[in-house]
Every structure is written in C-alpha cells, then in structure tokens.
Image (cartoon, rainbow over all chains, first blue to last red; front, side, top):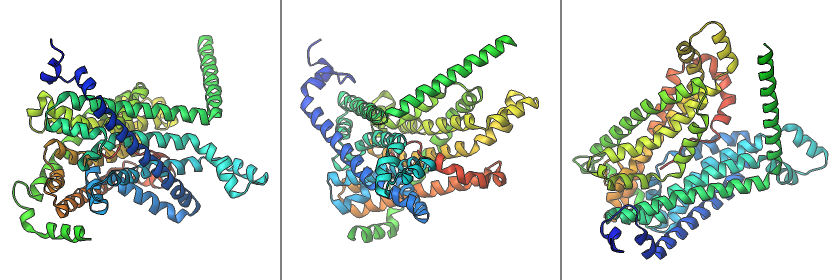
Length: 244
Length: 242
C-alpha cells in the first residue's frame, strides 16, 4: 500500500486527503464558522427587539410571529436564489438568508422566555424601584435566559447545517467542498467536509450549553432540588408499596 | 426590479411550462417525491412513536433523534448517498435523505403528544377497564392529535423544502429550475423557480392546516383550550428548513 493509494482508490476515508488539503479544509471551516457566527449574532440583534415589540403590543405579536413563520417555510435554495438579485453573488446572500431563518426560532423562544417570568417577580422588582430598562435587563432577561439559550442552540445548530447550501453561490464554507467533491466524484472530500460540519454543530451546541450553565447557576440548584424531591417521592412510594 | 418583471415574463411564457424540463413536469416530480417520502416517514415514525409513548419508554431517544437531525446537513446526506452505490438507483438517494429528515419531527412530536396526554384521563380510562389498545386508540391518540399534526405539518413543509435540494445532487423536482437558472446566469429563471418553490411550500402548509382542522377528533371541545396551548407548543418549531 503506497502513501497515495487511498487518494487513487477514491476511498471514503482518507488520511492522505486530510494531510495534503489541510489548508483548504481550514479555509472552508473558517468561512463556515464566520458565516454561522455573523448570521446568528445579527439574528439575535434583530430578534430581541422584535420579541419586545411582540410582547409590548399584543396586536403586533400575530403579524411578527406569522411573518417569521412564513419565512421559515421558504426553502433555503429558493431563499438564496431570491436574495441573489438583491445582493449579487456574495456572502451577504447567505448571511441574510440564514438570519431570516434564525428569526423564527429566536423570536419565539425569547418571547416564551420573557412571558415565563412570574408576575410576582416583576411586581416585586417594580416595588423595589426598578425602572422598565433595569427591570428588563436586570430581572426579566436573566430569568428568560434558559429559554433564550435553548432557542439560540437550536438556531445555531440548524444554521451550521444550512450554511452548506450557500455553496450554490460559492459561500457555503464546508458546503463548497461537498459541492466540488460531488462534481469530481471525490468521496474523501465529501465525507470529510460532512463530518467536519456535524462536528462544528456539536461543538457549537456544547459551547452554548456551557455558556448557559455559566450564566444561570441558579437553575442547577433548582434542578438538584427537584431531582432530590423526586428521589424522595419515589423512595416513599416504594416504601408504601412494600408495606402494602 | 428587472429580476422580478423578468421572472414574471418567464412564468408567463408557456414554453417554460411544457416538456421534460418544464414547470409542470418538475412540479409533478416534486409533489410525487414529497408525498411518497412523507408517507414512508409516517409509516416508520408514527407506529414507533405511538408505541413508545404508550408504554412510556424511549423518551430520551425520541427527543435526541430530533436534535441530531438538526445538526446533519441535508445537502451532505444527499451528496453522500448519491456518491454511494445507491447513487445509480434513480430517485432512491433523494427518497432516503428526505425520509431521514422527515422522521425526527414526526417521531418527537408524536411521542411528546402521547406522553403529555392528560394522565388523569388516561388513569380514569384504565380504571373503567379499557385494554391497552383501546386506551391507545380512544384516549391517548385523540389527546395527542394536536401535537402529532404539528409534527406532520413541520415534516411536510420540511420535505417539500428539502426536495428542492435534490436538484443540487442531480435529482428532479422544482429545484432544477433554480439550479438550471444559476447554470445559465439566467436570473429571471432563478427568481421564477424560487417563487414557484416558495408558493408550493406555503400551499402545502395551508393544506396541512386545513387537514388538521378537518380531522380533529375533538374539534369543538378543543378550540378554546387550544388558544392557550399553542404558544407553548410553537415555541420551538421542530426540524429546520433545508
């Protein structure tokens, strides 16, 4: 078996490919991460005020949620195709499309998170002299964080996966490699890029989960208390059964 | 604006609708593939989810499958299947990829729906002497119906959207109009194709909403209580557009 054999044999798994094309793989990964990151950050910056508007004015909630849901049903290939005449062939097409998709998930989750804040907590904060801005950022937002990060995780993971479709305009990160691998029937290129893509999604998800746990230490204490209560209830139930 | 008037002209040209590469043929392929895949996915996902939900096991599995499904790029699966030995088997790479992406939302929603069926009602029915299958069909299934239909809707829309990607891997369907337009630098055709696909996706969504309403086993009783539930149910739309 020579060193070139797996490239020549066009194997699915090929270490030689990863070694010789590491620069290409790195560039594609950097582009992938960049597009995903920019899209999710912009999505969050737009979704947050939208969620606030939907919460403040009930009549706005329907149209805001409806519009973002309609955007979600537009297939990504069609979305990128529709945006191309506006932006030309550029990364902006992909980023705009991905931002529009992330809005659906982010707006709903931020809204659900803000609405889950108990009314008593709000009243108490107001009683302590909190103004609307301080109430939002000091009390409501921290309490909404679990729901918010849950949405952020879903949005990020699906954005990582969807970035690959950007390959139609040449800005798909690892999707570009999948696309060129398909054209050249180059199996190792397709499989390596696909696996890297899934790995990126998993890493992003774990990082966000870690961030959430760092930012919301109190939820862990609650979960511990809940599971302890459940264990005790179960033990009590077993004891009762044993007696019966 | 040129692209939009151009797209309108493209759609108004009857030559673009006829023939092997015409809109009608591509639309037929698209609808056929989507319907077939949705049917296969339902046959796979629903019995498993209903059974697991009924016996109350495998919850972590049902939820995790949905999360993993989001992380896997459809495009990558399509290309991988096309390059595999299956690639020569006509539509099968597309069908398998579509089924893989329709199963998670169906499975998760049906399972969660079954588990969230009011436990008191289920216990009462059991107390009345209902057998397992009776319980499943007459109590749990009607109670789980809204969530099962939510899963069906997201799966349906997802399949129609994903079927577009088949074109990137050389398959049929409406996506071919878009990719062909890209290939010829024909922007009006690209926009026309995109509009066709978007309209089809919205039509399917609307159709599934109507089906949902028409077959709701508890239509009258639920209309009031549903309003308060939807916000929670819709907080995280299952699946992702592809």
